[in-house]
Image (tube, rainbow, N blue to C red; front, side):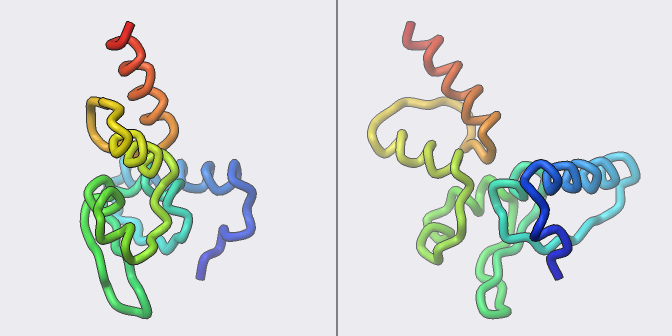
Length: 117
């Protein structure tokens, strides 16, 4: 059951930060069910996408969420990842890896603007 589904975005982010720190500092494995991939992608080191109780995609968030398969099955790709895909498709040259969150996308855009000055 998704216990933080009714939390505001800031409250949910704080819970994710606490869980992330528990994992990082204590080395414990945390299994979390969450539908908000914009939030999940920045903290997870492994994700499993399920559809009707069956695993359809599994692996590292950056690889899974930037895959064509994720788009085709209707996974809620993070906004930063989707923006990156649109910009690349339109011919905008962006370096680095596919961004999973707004902070990564902002850093990538700042770098691209520096290179084009």
